[in-house]
Amino acid sequence: MLRALAIFIVLIAASAGSAAFWAYNWWQNHSLTLSNPVDFEIKDGATLQSVSNDLIKHKLISGVPQLFEWGWRVTLAKATVKAGDYRFEGTLTPAKIAHALALGQTVTVTFTIPEGWNMYQIADRLEGVFPRFSKDKWIAAMKDPKLLSTLPGQPATAEGFLFPETYTFNPRVTPHEVLTSLIQTFKKHMTVDLIGKGQALNLNPLQIVILASIIEKETGKAEERPHISSVFHNRMRIGMKLQTDPTVIYGIWQRYDGNIRKDDLRTPTPYNTYVIPGLPPGPIASPGIASLKAAVAPIDSKDLYFVGKGDGSHLFSTTLRDHQKGVYQFQIAPSKSGAARN
Image (cartoon, rainbow, N blue to C red):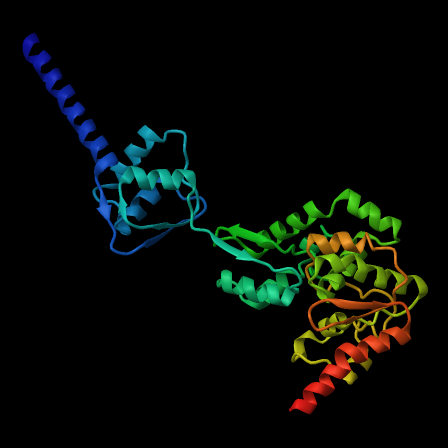
């Protein structure tokens, strides 16, 4: 009797060991080759059991869900499944899938916000990157009072604070999460030193960003930005209007067709610096770090004017007479010459 019981126990142990060996072999080596990539979503709050069932429904694993759950608990006892969007392709094993879910190797999207883009251009790009949200929803998020409460000067929108940089996100993020990240990147560059230099020039943090955004739009040449800055500082110091075209364009952005007309320069808008004194009420674009620094570090000059030379650079002048000569040389004369050739 005792001998029979012992034999039975040995058989049970052998059977259990064989089952465990088979299960472990399935976990590590049972492979499945996908002919096409499979997108797989794990929602917040999903359990290991629900994920196991979904993996079978998507034909990413075979067998029963309990096998996947067993393998997870044995090899990844302290890990949890990470919510997000996953993309599986090629040859997979249950172990390979599990490690991807435990590490949160989700699908990501990467995009770049160029220096000098305004919030409408940024919203267009974000709509393309995150098609679940329309451009209007992105614009609405940029006007969210909760988001704006974290910005200096109580701006009406997040314009100017969406720092130009390359970003990577999970495609399931919300507009608030994306914009918060962009603003946090801005805050890293808006240092105490930079704010202090602005205060020495009678600029508060919001005004620094406003001026930097104008500088950003006026020139793409880094070496010119402190000189452009000096012109605007000189004008503000003597009470002279800034008269900068990029602010006019921003004020008529919704109907701007690529050309500024005389009526545009005369028509009052909050951003028409040919009409209003001083800085406009808010930024007109996202300035990069070079423009932020230039706004608080103008060169020492007496210049009040600049005109584009047609090659991306500018001619700077102290007097209106010299400026008018430059306008004729670099804008009027070439225009006449072109008309004559035509």
